[in-house]
Length: 256
Image (tube, rainbow, N blue to C red):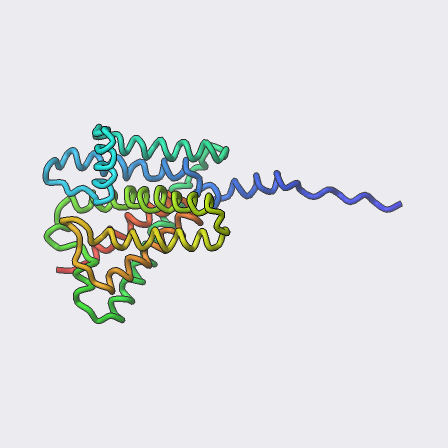
């Protein structure tokens, strides 16, 4: 008689094992919320402490203006909505709420590494362009960088620009294109390109916007693509942390 073959692991068991790994766990919206919570507290608390001298992030100002236009002008509504969106998103995924110890050290290290990678792309493009205007357009001015408000603003950019351009805009475009029955691959490519173009263009809008320069626009478009890919592959927390880390590195590396 031939021995019976042992049944292999079921797909549910395999999925459960994979979900326990760092790469899956760090992508969860709940992990993203816990990871960015200190950034959110420092940014919002810093703006309150700094008062009228604080420079609010552009995406933050746009989102607040939108809410005020709807009749919701409460100061803490936007950060509260950020928390609620991530909690609701995690609830719909039906993934575990438990987070392993040490997860956030890994996420922080990953964000720093990815931020250095994007900074390297900036350095290479500067070298290839030989354009002094590019450095001026992409760096934080020395007089601004000396203030604590600049460091607070870096954190706000990481959270609210990713909230606006990736979590809201990119996801909204994906939903719209899915409703239009666009195939998955063209759908993702279209959403990445469109959201990245708008992300780049937003840096030249308003009284604090930069002067349009094609080299800086191209880099910001590529950065938008980079963050969109991170959002899809690594989750909101890694995208927001990398964005904030990159802004801090640019601020630290910009000389007088």
